[in-house]
Amino acid sequence: MVTENQNFFQKVYEVARLIPFGRVTSYGAIAKYLGAARSARMVGWAMNASHTMEDIPAHRVVNRKGLLTGKHHFDGTNLMQQLLENEGIQVQEHQIIDFEKLFWDPTRELGEYYQ
Image (cartoon, rainbow, N blue to C red):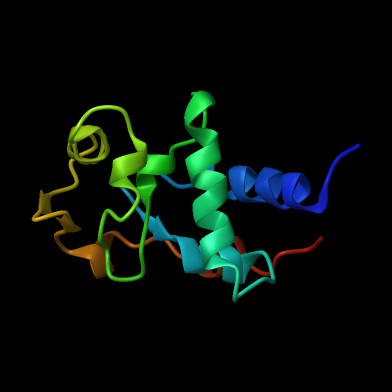
């Protein structure tokens, strides 16, 4: 039996897989796109649970200010930052430089979400 949370997590993963290389989005932007604007924390839980799945670019999902708040869920001290830097994204003091420029808004890029 699939629980409601598992179903939501799968929707989060579908969106996360669409984040382009070298771009980032926020937990809240994904939640808003999915019609659950107040569920940014739940998106964070989904990202945390995704670390066993290689096809989910969880490192591209940060908080609304561009801070790497999920970095402690990655193996190693700076793995999240290293993955972002490998994509050409600059990070200073755990925050993405030019966050607004690199921000990928799923609602704007993908249009309205249809369930």
